[in-house]
Image (cartoon, rainbow, N blue to C red):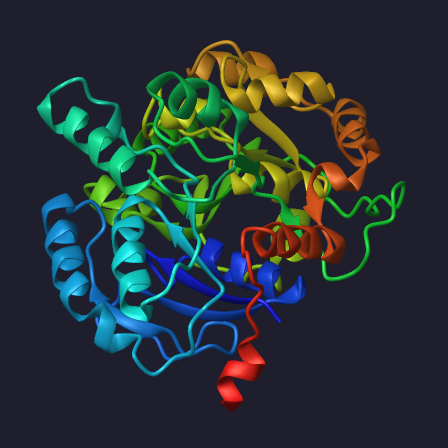
Length: 390
């Protein structure tokens, strides 16, 4: 059984849980180690007890650098009680630095995989800091065996033009994970509530102040014909007063966090549209990404709303689904959605449900393929079970 050491920047990130689930469904044994954004260590992620590398703070670059430096000193002792892994997967640049330290602690040539699912705005700067970060990434990635990323636009706009990573690239999209085998043509039943009011769901990592203000302006303009439902984890560092803002808006509601995948069907079946727009790093990462909410919403029949000039918009145009905006304004939203009625919505949703479900989801066969790809990086496949018993 392939043993994967998974080093992550935030063990409580829902996307980390999804990747662990995929690796284990594919037949791998996973050891999880990483930082946390909580006050106290996290005891359990999918039945795993994470190896705690300390706390970090969202948006605090200097503090995170200090935490990485501190962890680099102690990571050998923290990993000392575990068997040698077959592969180390490092999620994000800061963990790539620690992956090399971890490999040294095992005293063996363990292949390193660099998983980069966002291109941080700091590495795109043209000043001394940006150039230094890119040089650091090239240095740390000089001998990685595989780059895993989630959008073709990341490759086309960053990794290839900047020459950051020479390793082969594996595209692993942010798709929803299905425990059961995906059967093409097995569409979900239409369980959307009857509108109006029409509900737009903005779910996941809520970090875009411009989206919040745009949706608030639009809902006020519509005077109750549209409601905005927010769920997930708001990045409070990006909003002066997120909860106060939402409470003051008559047609906005924040319903707290949710569990993925347990709650996904319920939360998306409660809305008509999914907000697949992010201006957090406009012109850069936000324009290039294919977000989790795109796949999750479409998987359960919510009609996606996106900007037409983004990678998400181009993807939806290829699929001939969704509502694409020419500009980010309440007026553009009103022109696109304001006259919504049942027959038009049924057509929009029908096109989403008609797509092959594999467009939105991975199943166990995809998980096995991912694990086999990781196994292929190992010259002499390791055995977690054998080493654990030794």
